[in-house]
Image 1 (cartoon, rainbow, N blue to C red):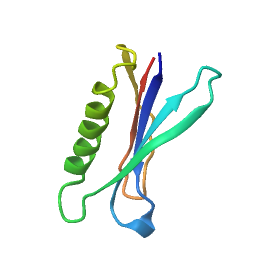
Image 2: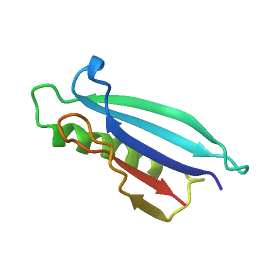
Image 3: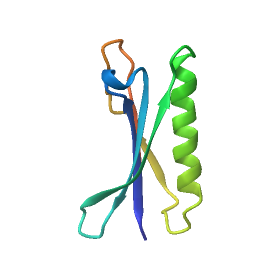
Length: 93
């Protein structure tokens, strides 16, 4: 079975305010390949809304892959930007 995980972290300041979503696939030899990404900008809207949208997109994507494992483990990994916003990584194992 394929193993997937995603990461959400603040976008680089040069891109503006938002969140970067990256989806990874873990190969049997434990190497990881980035298989998708997206940017969720929040600009004038609440940063939490854009962050929630990124999580919903990632979870929706994972749910459409029948070969993904069923057990999800969310690991909070702080990725703080200069405003104190943090990111989260969720892994499927």
